[in-house]
Length: 306
Image (cartoon, rainbow, N blue to C red; front, side, top):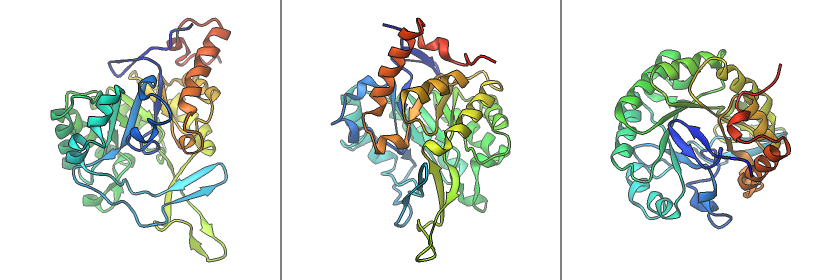
């Protein structure tokens, strides 16, 4: 058998397959389907300082090639996540490697969340910083599409935690590589991409938007070619490892991301239709490496031939 272990953000993962934040709840929702320890890591739904109810319903709609969501980052808040038996305590018992996605409505809140999770970090292996959130205190601009704001957020989080910091980039920018370089310069240990693409859908019978928030984020197979291109561009621009995601629906998709430059991958929207897909991706990687007589999955990273 080939070696599926990989080094990512100073961590040694048993394999490069993770679950994308927001698509597997807090991990335990999938524990009835498989042993969470089999994954490289579980990336839990976004956490901020206080509980959040998210956006009004309807918040999800199916579209050609994927789905649009505007969940609004609903979550229990830091304190409940750290101490409630339904969250981190249960994940610790499962033995899973846990990455926690974090967000805030201000730079200070990002730092506060990072510091709080750092203080209770037993059982947490890394933080994934979602910089694609609305910046309420700056007139609704998104942290992830303003280079100066993105730098300030990453700098604040880096200064508030000893945990590895993974910065999740927004694809809704003109130059994704520039934002990768900003994250790296401010101390990110890795970057993850892509987050969802801005999108909307209209019900032609009611003439109303299909989701209450009007616009939302497009995910699923339709975004994969965009995600592959952005991973490739960032791989050529930064030295930190990349967590690639966006439309992975089979093992071959994961290989494609790795050939473009991803060190690890995240299965996202496909979890909703096939909760066992992450394990199938792991099995495919093992078979693919054996078939091509490749000793280690690390040899795939950026190995696209030109």
